[in-house]
Amino acid sequence: MFALAWPVVLAEIGWVSMGIVDTIMVGPLGPAAIGAVGVGSSLFVALAVFGIGLLLGLDTFVSQAFGAGRLDECHRWLHTGTALALVLAPLMMMAAWAGTASLGLWGFDPAVFVLLRPYLEIVTLSALPLLLYAAFRRYLQSMSVVRPVMFALVSANVVNAVANWALIYGHLGAPALGASGAAWATVISRVYMAAVLLWAIVLHAERDATGLFQVPLAADVARMVRLVRLGLPAALQVVLEVGVFASASAFAGRLAPVSLAAHQIVLNLAALTFMVPLGLSSAAAVRVGQAIGRGDPVGAGRAGWTALVLGLLFMSAAALAFLSLPRLLVELFTTDPEVVRIGVSLLFIAALFQLFDGTQGVLTGALRGLGDTRSPMLWNLAGHWLLGLPLGYSLCFFWRWDVQGLWVGLSTGLIAVGLVLLTVWIRRVGTLAAAPVPGAGRDAGLLPAEE
Picture 1: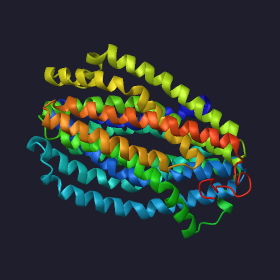
Picture 2 (picture 1 turned 90 degrees about the horizontal axis):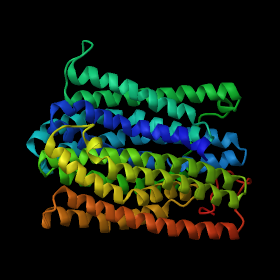
Picture 3 (picture 1 turned 90 degrees about the vertical axis):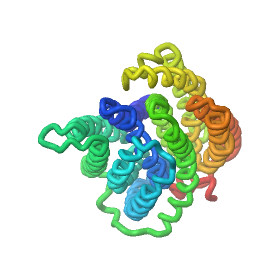
């Protein structure tokens, strides 16, 4: 599990660190720029993750096909995922631009709003390369080819940092675009990531003679329907989880810029620690799915538990870091004393939900490997949107707890989702061990849930 997970974990850290670098590099422009870039990124990702989530079904189909020794099926699912990305990208862009036109109704602070709208208009251009990257990544890592994914994201951070430096502040002959420069840097880095993984797919096919080029390119509508059917609950789950934090950011945008800046800084730090269980989640989906594909239910359960233990060990360390070094962590982003004061208080709240956030993150992937994408979706809806966000909104605006109230609500929702998904996993593993795995090695990619 560790051998498969660590490159994926580094890739996830590389993903979120690009947002952290954007926030740090616009920091000298002031709290409004920090808030605009943070909120703009959160709002676009909240939309983009729906498309990315639809492609998460590739984890299950490709890993189970690979476990059953059906490389031709792996390639067909790659073609299906790529076709779906090409269909989704223009739809996502139109939805993002329509949402951008309504930003004036959201009640943002004027200093934030003037920077936020152009940032969102530009970053929306990254939709197609982002979705292609997602399809290429699911295909590669489901066949245990994970190092190119790590390389793509780690090196993309270098591309992003240089582009930020040039485009925000006008170096290397580029215009000084301010916060909009960070958006262009994001577009450039996402094009680069998709190109690197496409190159890795071609190289892997030629080096290992996988037969990729012997499988004809064809638009298989039936496969696309199966991918959407499995991916839709996963997409909704991701949207619900990311969307609740994007909504919290939008609510924080109604507060003073210092509160919004502190919120975005701590959100970046919490997202950074979550990348480890998220990487373990992907590894768990692959290992569990491969075990199902080869007809090994005991191995599937063992893979999920192993990923969970590793995730909890890391999140315990993260919680200790948040509790013991809060000021140092916030001051990596800003020295504004009021932002630092608020950020320290938010880090203490974030420390409380680390273990539960890790639990729900890892088990979402393990359940996806079993073909269960509905349980995480339903419980994210209940925990975040029926409990966490309403509670946070009430504490923030009705009881006047300011941004700290939002975070208490978010923390409550995460704790609830983590506990419930742990119960779901225990029950599913028990059922799996007591029954044979239908379809394993016989019809690669046919899930127990579908049968």
